[in-house]
Amino acid sequence: MNSLYPETEPYDHGMLAVGDGNEIHWESCGNPQGIPVLVLHGGPGSGSSASARRFFDPGRYRVILFDQRGCGLSTPHASDPQTDMSVNTTAHLLRDIECLRKHLDVTNWLLFGISWGCTLGLAYAETHPGRVLALVVAGVTTTRRSEIDWLYRDIAPLFPVQWECFRRGAEQDSQRHISGAWFDKLTMRGIAVLQKQDLPHGELVEPRTQSMQAEFAKTTHEPDDDLIASYHYLLNDADPVIRLKAARDWHAWEAASILVGPKAALSPKWSDDRFILARARIITHYFHHNAWLEDRRLLNNANRLKGIPGVMVQGRFDLEAPLVTAWELSKVWPDGELVIVPNAGHSPGSPGMTDAIVSATDRLARTLGS
Image (tube, rainbow, N blue to C red; front, side, top):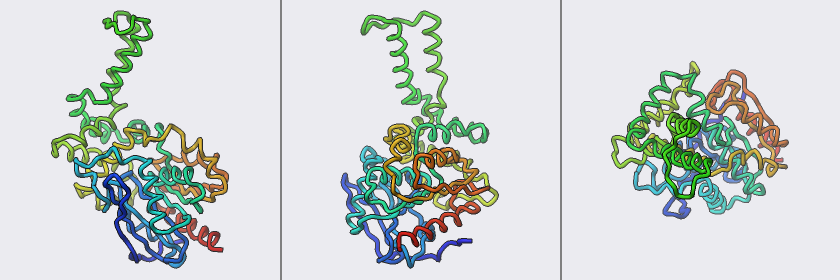
């Protein structure tokens, strides 16, 4: 059994200006002369966690953690409605990581990411493969559209009561905005239908045929497709009461799949209104835009990981990041080892997950330190 390492405190920390008025908080723990490892937190928007330090031997690793834009101790904070989210994208985060690497005078490093942190780690490794010594990822995600749809639609039959509440929480936006992006989809599909009829350009014609009526009907019965869009709008509403209710409803839905295990528990942070406002706003911002990643991009570009050793630690019963993604990634990443943990879920604290992660970091410490 590979138990967690003892708790450690940072020997250095600071704020780094990364542009666009943003500063990211970072900290370093462990051995200043050890193997550099960058910890990429999940969410997006969950912020770094001190518990992540314990996956690494403090005598062998220089453990670096940071809060991604808009969350944790980084500023400005996404809970503030005035914070500009247009400069918080995957591309911005990748540039921030490079800024941090240069600031800390790191030549190359091991990357460790859980959930969204896995997506960000893969994106960085495929963009800067020469800067990556190795990868350890758990709760494997690539944030493609099918993975987002699973979390906020397809998993619904497993949690019908919570799903009903989640949908009801979005109704306020649907009633006021026709669900924002839902209206955009209706409009674009309507235009597409008109174009199929070979009508003169710019002519507005009432749809009369049964086929056209059927096409328009499809656009008006798909609110579930745009719950993310609805919550995205609600979390950016001018009314603070509406924003907070949306953040609470969003996290109530996410809690459903987290609390399935007998020992599962939510982070104490989830009772902090400022935390959930920022986290929900960042998540919906990213997922509403498909994380600015072309669908399947990280799987299609996995050949760029050639020569980078890695370990994918995946719970067999992970409801938030189903095993299929890790399995597909293992097929296109020859240097990546897939470790499936029986009876484990998404949390790194699930039975067997901690042992598998620590085992992976210990093995890589021996390999990279030799």
